[in-house]
Length: 288
Length: 334
Image (cartoon, rainbow over all chains, first blue to last red; front, side):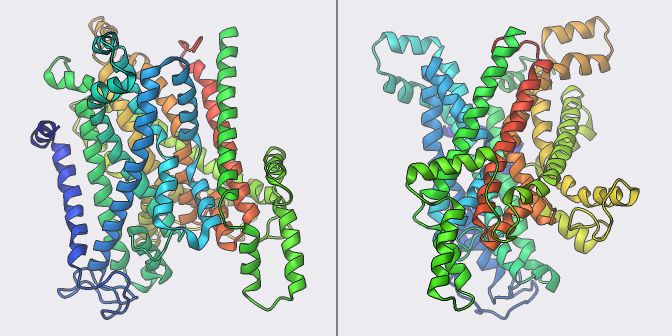
């Protein structure tokens, strides 16, 4: 696993760029630990100041320093994405590997449920979820709801890998030597599945962060926990763009865009790396 | 023909499953939570002024009936399904007494128009450019186009729409940024009205296409670059078939089949994007209606829109699935 990461860093430009961008954003989020202001305090600095040496990213109309506020927002947004990704991985790895290993009727049944979850438009359902919960909507609840709705696409990718593994000779060998299904799946197949799990984790983080930003901007989440979306929501509430306080909107949008591109580059470069066809092309097996 | 019938039946079963699970999810979310929508509405309505206890009681009773919350769990569940199947979600609370179905019916054509135009454009553009980029790998311009498409692709619809809104609304105001047509323009098939509809659609369509194009581009490029090395393509090249014909009829034609499957798969998330984009540009479709309904606390309208969205997206997927064998004759017996 570590040699793979080292190789990726050394030889894949996309992966290197992705790692730098994501690392930069993560380091920025880590600065929230040394923030001079608690995230919920307002009017700790003069409001509506443009970016300057003392306030790098300016200040908001609510008297908050955009720089430090953004460190909390990015931290919460990243943690949110990560928790949705980890939670939904539990479902998608289980469903994907089970479906792929079993094949046949189990596979067909699971995959039609799976495709259902891919097709259903989730945004109206999440809006409905907020609508019935209202003020009781919280960060963990939203993460749980999104994780239980957003596993399907990745389960399909994992299932494809597991399906090809189950017809390999070493699987036959395992079965004949008397290993139990659980052992085969976890000990023998999981290592092969891990790269694609990594790839789908990045993708899923992008997906969940995107939805979180969207829901927060509309005010459909817990608007007291600072996230990137919530920051833009408050900026819109104070009509920051009309008032000329552009830095309140510009920096959150810029940073979240860097995060998206970083995660996306990490995802596609790993995917290309693990795809056997492009691996062949890299080795010169296929002429271009 | 019999093979197609079997295939169509299977897709139809999948369609029924999608609607079944989707509507059940909507029911579960709206009914299994500890919060009572009637109490929410009552408290929202009474917080503005003093209402007499009798009036509150009457309101509560009529709302319970309106929302189909009368009776036990089984009859509520049956009532919920009846509403979906008949398409009658009761009167809207925020636009009383207009029925929810009328409001949705008014908004749906805008969403369908926006969605179909932008999806077709993004699909055609992305696949064409991706196919070219996969075939002519040395082209600098196509490589640049690829990088541009990849940079915009991971950014969520909301952010892209928002950036376009800022650029064309504040920095360089040349395009209308809100609404579906110019206000006070008389409806009809005259040039003025059609032109105002088109100009108002440019920005929403552009933001949907910008986000959508990257996915099709990358998918098509990798498919084409794999097909290019297949024996039959090499043979065609050696036999002197023109490059345009190879690319169009030999390579991209084959790569299109998985892309169309991908289109059916991603329709749900494209729909999510359209809803959000509509809201940014105040486009008079389902999305704007949904957000307004939430802000107005209009329970029946929110439920109605969620249910209609699920059914509408499933129908669109079913149509693509049923047309798919035209493109890929190998689907005889799936």
